[in-house]
Length: 154
Image 1 (cartoon, helix red, strand yellow):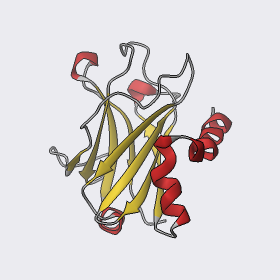
Image 2 (cartoon, rainbow, N blue to C red):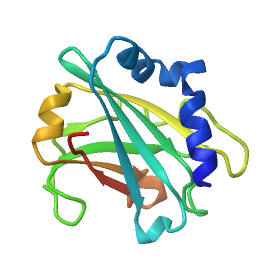
Image 3 (tube, one colour):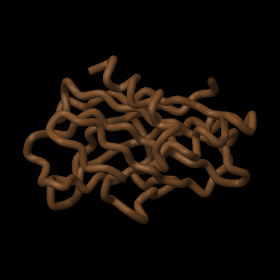
Image 4 (cartoon, rainbow, N blue to C red):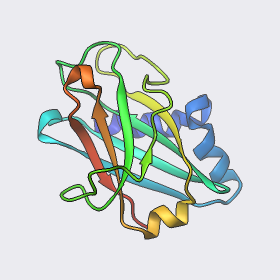
């Protein structure tokens, strides 16, 4: 799975979902990669968030390498940025990243889901402010966290 995830990351420049991060690299803007740890409800799966500076906003590309088996297809995944850590974060998200909740792609069984989001925050603020990215299932699928990762300076 690890090799599959890195293959997808390398291939992102060919897909619209990866353009924000690719454009940021080409323009020498800041990019931060956040490994997301699966919660016990989603054990065995991997994910990562790539955050790319885009002026006064941050483009976020989430690569999700699996969801729990009980999640309905197509999966509706919610993403948030909270102040705090995975172990202890605020109850209300600092940024709700859910204008859309469907993945950009619907791969076959075992594929990596790609989600493109945008946060109305400057990347340097997110990197220095003790924030955490959380991916959650939909209310219809139990509304539970499946991935979490702390945003840190790279």
